[in-house]
Image 1 (cartoon, rainbow, N blue to C red):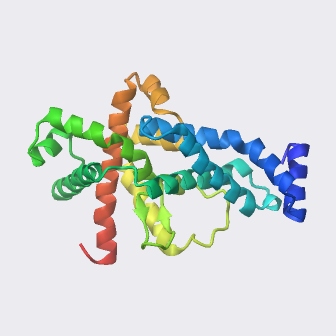
Image 2 (cartoon, rainbow, N blue to C red):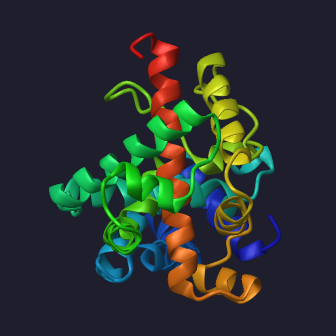
Image 3 (cartoon, helix red, strand yellow):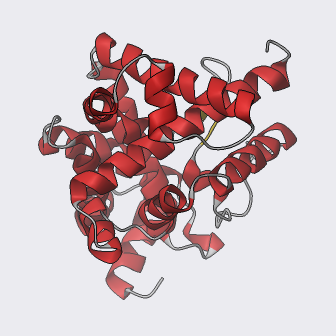
Length: 261
């Protein structure tokens, strides 16, 4: 894999289960956990302690080290980043860190997006959503700000399977699977991936660009702002609207697929 010392650690751990070798691997890839935690922390706007995010991420790193197969010739970082991110988000869910009032507001916006876009057959603008919610534009923008720090975790788990199934489709799942073989890669999940990809494609241009730069190109919200010449808070707002719009569309599509809508 390129580094003789690390290659030796993999051999020692996979063949002999040496705890010392595992510890060396954890130290080697700790920076990956810091990177993922740092990106998520930007989205949460410091409402969660960085140390908590890092601690959850280490569990994901340990899981990745345990399950990774070096013989397949896949870069470990590519494999591990998904498990690290998932472990952090699982940890946050276990904390139930999002207040119920914020969850309710987020769902109200999602439902409004879904209903209006279904009725009109197109993307709707802020004024239309605000009017449908019987609030003014200033109140709508304030509402977006209140729910913005939930949008990162929401989009990471935007299409969930049955409770307890462990099956979900995230934005990152729409990128080509570099791990090649995956027992969860069944027809139902492939169809869900296509629905999610189509939903992203139908976003307004600026929102789609923000989603692409954040999830596909790994830019931070601040970096995206520099690229587009907008403030970080404006980028955060665009990201939040895109997430809520996607969730509204996908929730309607999911109901249609299971025959409940």
